[in-house]
Image (cartoon, rainbow, N blue to C red; front, top):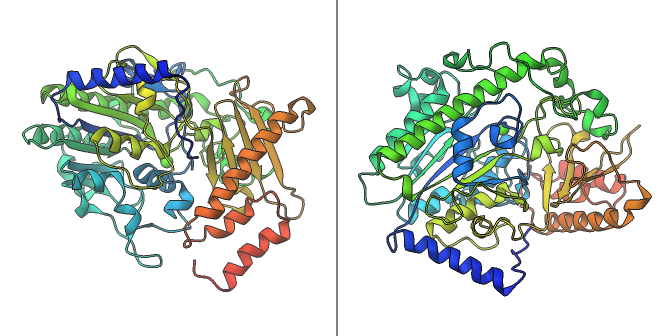
Length: 509
Ligand SMILES: [Ca+2]
């Protein structure tokens, strides 16, 4: 939620001003940084050396982490591809982009305020490659399309794209040398960087890798990296650590994928393939950083790395994503600004950040004025001082998939509260509360613990505030208004249901 960074003391304020001035001294006055934004698809923090994952191998990303800053409480406010990508590009929560599978594409008016459009208007040379993940429509109800014409160089594709480079039309020129798409994006990035370095204009490169999204199809070049390895399991792995979680959370495909995606019976093999796909991304990140050095652009290029959602990987006995638990919503985030005094100190940030913050950060770095009323805020004050405050709280949204699984949560640095409204038949509306400070694995729901009454009340208040924001700010189209009632704890099940049936009878989707 929008909660301005608080600056507790004058000392901290002065320190930040000094840090900022140190940035200015290191760069040519008026010179704007280049920006490289790299996005994985379905990558959990349980996949990287810099997030302490036993057996994973991510040397280039670990180096990026050591060079820059790692964010340890970074959340995707919707943990599914399409919605998260629209949020990342606009800095708005899902109910304000109006964009998700089953709801609809992003409207052109919103897209005009997305960071790639604003940076290009400000003189940046822009490129996109990979899975774009959503379309742009002139108006609700009209057909959408990919905004290819809004980039100087385009290597993007529709839908899920393909792991076979030759099947990705805009990337086909790389197919002979890089038959697997993950490395082809590294090559695309390297070419764009080399070309852009000849230009006086700064550049903004955005790459959205398909990996490690299903279907599992890793690059055979890395078949030996994790072959026959065995991996430690996280402390909340397996069904026995999911029995305390809501009945609603077990109704979606996440539940059966514990079996069908082989977390139960072939854990090591499954994780080896997952890590292999991420290893290929890591390799591509290495290609891109090498290209920055070769082009002489490394000292003035900010690199940001994150994922559109996490992945359960067997935690609590689930596979896949969407649900509001840590492995699905909390994701990797690395920011590296080579011009900054905080770089190279292996700093980590424990403040609360979200995917809504990516666009405001990029706009801030580029010196581009921000659109009014964004839900996110620049991460750069945290890069100045990682101990300063981030968001007071963020929503965790699921308005997709089976209705039983629709949920809204709020997370702070210390707590997570989740509301599951579905109350049909044998179900009753359910609340969950986790003390993340002491229980990052979410092994205990303390919602009904009498010693936690204060925390319950405080988190309910934040939750209700998030619902009011939804009710006051949701786009009028694409069926987001009824969810403002569905998530309202104060309404009966019948009142919630009426919001949906009313739309079904009269309003356009
Ligand atoms: Ca995804």
